[in-house]
Length: 261
Image (cartoon, rainbow, N blue to C red; front, side, top):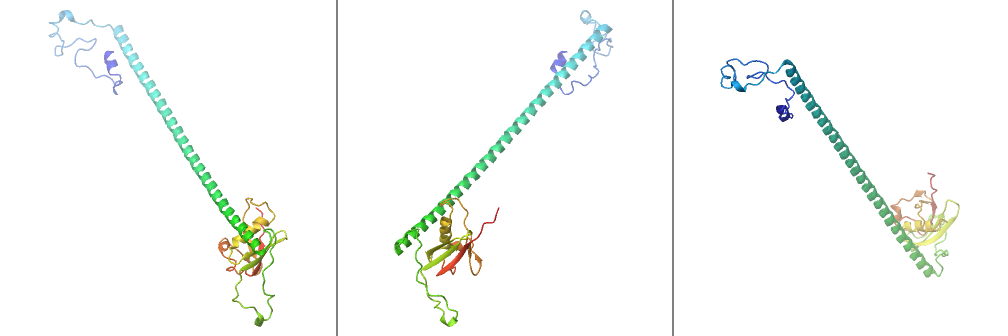
């Protein structure tokens, strides 16, 4: 039993024990074995008592019970260790999932902040353009002696182009002003005078401010079309001067209808 307690963690503790070479329990030693008749003469008074068959069976039974108990304890210990490893694995999985969720939330928050910043920059740019348009309108009103909201009188223009090619006005004449008439989808029209070197974006902003919708609202930019020849102006055209687009000295533009979503 002492040996079992000392060697309970050995990997071969459950293996059968080898046959001993010395004294075997229940068998008298021979003369060639230690403790035989020749060796017992000096220790005659110290011999161990021989166990009976019942005592040997009881001792074997106790040893088998001890071995089974040790095996059960080892199995329980291994089961506890397996449960602990499973708890650790689940805990690590939960921590990894929480870290991944925090990372996704941070990315979504940064994307939302980036969209808000871009929106604010876009609104600020449009506000600067509106302010520039208002300043230009005030300058034109002051120059022509009218109010900002009043429609200035058209500049002096040559008469209608005669049908005869020989009577066409000179093509080299340059105009400083341009009279633009814009037809809205509801049938109404807006007329305003712009400088020939102003960009087409000024006309678009003027239409957005006076087309009957709430000024300063977050509305989509209008789409401008030329009357004849038919042409849809792109975003790149919005940066080009009216003179370069062939809208001087006068032109008629059409606001395209919005397609239903």
